[in-house]
Amino acid sequence: MPTVPDGRRYYAIGDIHGRLDLYEAMIAAIEDEIARAPGFDCRIVLLGDLVDRGPDSAGVVERTRRWQQTRKVRVLAGNHEEMFLAAFQKPEALRHFIKHGGFETLLSYGFTTRQLAELPLEDLFEALPQIVGQSTRDYIAGFETMIRAGDYVFVHAGVDPSRPLAEQTRSDLLWIRERFLRHEGPLEKVVVHGHTIFDRVMDCGNRIGIDTGAFRSGVLTALVLEGDQRRILQARIADDGTAQVFHGDRAQ
Image (tube, rainbow, N blue to C red; front, side, top):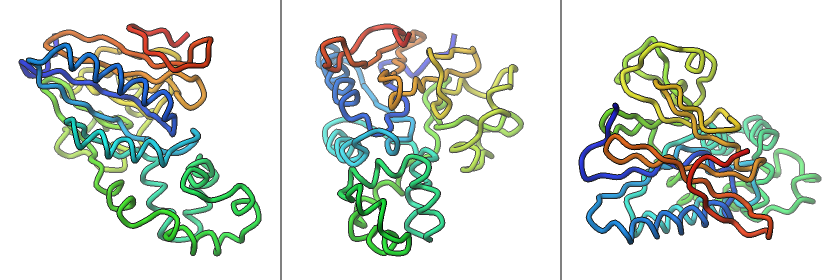
């Protein structure tokens, strides 16, 4: 059985996509668990795509910065962070970003619906650096691409099965899909990833996909690794409208 180093517990959280409500519930549940396990070295890994599509990308980014002040939280870059940063480079990249979930992100940073609908693209491009400050851009640009933990490796999208981990490209780590998902043989380590949405956690032996589509399903998933054990936490909106965390895969 694959293991993580003795005395450590890892919480890997899938694609948040602006769902601050689910993220806050997940943080509270994880902090409660950590408080009840004082002997463990607990580490959190966010698998990327903090931004876009959901209603509060700005809130998710800032909440992550605050959490890092009190906890060992490492953040992987997702393809949506890459599109966000590219939007500051040229207007056409901004157009692409807005079309693929960035509309909601820009609203969360203070643009109005009317501005996004009526302003020419060049004017939006000019205003963007004033709305999203340099410190935020630098912070997002510092996200990692790969994190190793014992027999596991955390990445956003997956890995190129034909290359060793040491030779992976940033593009594949953030964007790969079919070549990785179709691969059925063993990999150098068990790959824990997001990027591709599944109705339920996809444990295929060589990889574990935990993106349960929080922005549209209302289910945010975390994989907990300790020794040779694995378990699932899921934050979802309960019938009374509050965000609650459940043990196990209850995505359906």
